[in-house]
Length: 414
Image 1 (spheres, rainbow, N blue to C red):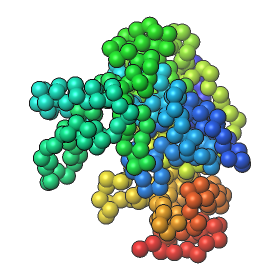
Image 2 (image 1 turned 180 degrees about the horizontal axis):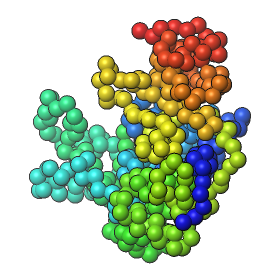
Image 3 (image 1 turned 135 degrees about the horizontal axis):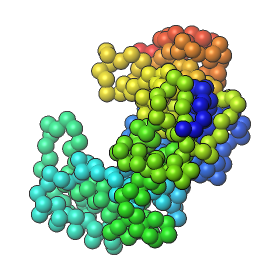
Image 4 (image 1 turned 120 degrees about the horizontal axis):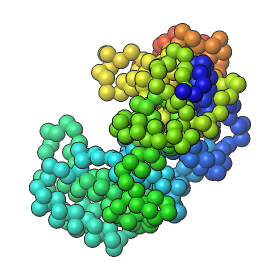
C-alpha cells in the first residue's frame, strides 16, 4: 500500500489531472493549448444535445476559457488526425493510438444492424463499402441516395427510426470498418473507410503504434494506463468507466501497472478502500480554478466517484419528466476551487442573443464568493457564445445574488 492522503489532497490530484486546478489565462486560448488539453483528457464525449453548445466544445471552455471552436474541429478534420470518433465512454472523440485497443473491447451491436435479415445486411454492407471506396466522405442520407435505397418506414416509432443504410453504417462503425471523417454543420457523421481516416488501421486486427498486434489484455492495459493518467486518482470502477472497460479487466491491468510502478495503491480518508494513484500525478497545494462543467464532462463521468470525492450528488435530468426534476433540464455543476459550489440550469437563446439562466442552486458548502465568481463565469460564457445578455430567473437560492453581481435586472422566465 502506498501513502495515505486526505480527501482534499485527492480532490486536488483529480482536478490537476483534468486540467481544472488553476486560474485560466486571460488571453484567448491558442490552437496548441486546445490540442494539449485533448491530450490530457484522452477522450471527449459527444452528444447531440445542443441546448447550450455541442457537448464536446464545453470541456475546453471549462479548462481554457474562450477559444476558437474551429481549432477543436481541425483536430479531427485534418490529416494526420489528432482525434477520431469511436465508442469509448459512449460516442467520443478519442486519440488515434487508442482506436485499435478500443475496437477489441467496445461492443455496441444495439446501435447497428443486428436485427436485420443477414442477406439484406451483407448486401448493403458490401454496397456501402464499395461506394465509400470510390467517393469522398458521405453522410448516411447521401449514401442512401447514392445507393438508390428506398424502404417503407414506420411512423409510430418513438425511438430511433433509422433506415437500413444507417443501421448497417452503425454496424460497420462499431466494427471499426468505417469511421467518421468529421461532422457536418448539422452534426451528421461523414463516413469514410477507416483505412482512409486512420491509415495505420489494418481493418483486421488490433495493432499498436509500432505495428505489433495487441491482444485484449494488452489493450486493457493501454486503456487503463490512459484512464489512470486522466483521473489522477480513482477506484477500479471509476477507472474502468472512463473507456467503459469491464471492471475485472481493469483490475487485472491495475495489478500489472502496480508491479511495473505505473500505478500506486493509496488510502484516502473517507473514500473507499481500493484506490489507485498515477505516480506521476501532482498534488498541488491549492485549487484556484473556476468552471462551469458540461453534464458530459470527464470529471463528472462516474457519478459515484463524484459523490465520494466532492460530496456532490448529480444526475442529468434531461429525460426526467419536467414535474419531477429537482434542479432543471440542462444543469451544469459549478466548480470553484476544490468545491462543487452550485448548479446552474442554462440555455442559449440564439435568436434572442441571450444566455437564459433558469435556476441557480447553491450548495451548502459554497464559498462566500460563489455568486460573484459564478456571475463572472456566466458573463464569460455568454461572450464566448456570442450572446449579448445574461438573464437570470428568480429560481434557486443563489439566483438573486448572481443577478445582483451581474448588474442585470432579474427576470422570471416563462
